[in-house]
Length: 330
Image 1 (tube, helix red, strand yellow):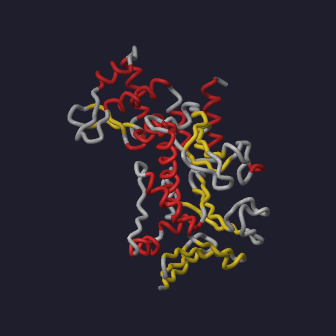
Image 2: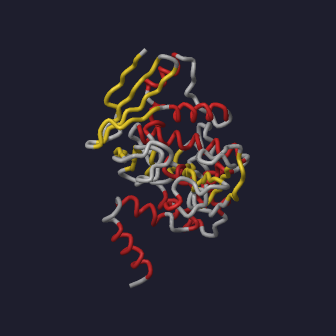
Image 3: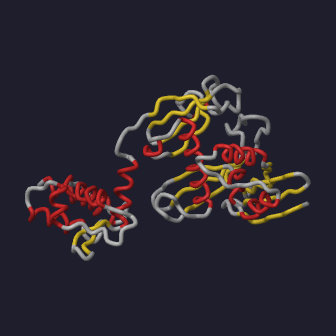
């Protein structure tokens, strides 16, 4: 058996776990020349142009290949899945899957081992009041206390761990530590909203969600039973790509139209922007002010209440993290 046959057998065995098109995509991309073609097309790509087709001669020269015949073969292998031949110039351009692939490479996902050393930010630890830092490793931006051990020291090896967010390496470029922290918050909020709406932000796949409650939750500080300050967590997982995340219903309430309308009636904005750190601070103040109460543990249900002055709105979340009841009281 040749090495190529062994590779084919390995791919065939993987088809039982994932779609056959996926294994073919991996096999197509296991070649430096084809990756170079995609990157060359990306460099010529203008998102506002009417025609992004790159002529064969230009592409051949950019990739610096030595055999026109073999180069055509590589183009044929990519055509239909990642690139297409079209345009008045009869050249080649990226299809959306090819574009997304290159964008993932450009963002640095899984390509480079980026590290951002611990850097202090102007955010005190909510547990002890000490200064906090952010650092980046393995695709995650960590927020940690510089003094205490954090709320869940037995669940992580990160000293003083407070929070972590999935973050692309490209998000570290041209930003201060405070701006990186702000961008990570926006990333987390957008991920939460997309998952809550049932659409995976990574692959657009369907999302399954469920509510987990601590039946014996200690209301003061971090619970000794579940290791969290929140009595309930919303769990999300994509059925396609297995991307997953966890969020408090107190945070999810910020996205519901009834709550957005409630705050708007009181001239309080729930609009956030990475360049406006005050809007992010306001958002945290709002969600932390939300009151959450267990309605039932079997099945799990929680109620989240937002209140201002003598007005309040209450949302009830069921076991599948769907809002099943909205009550507005003045």
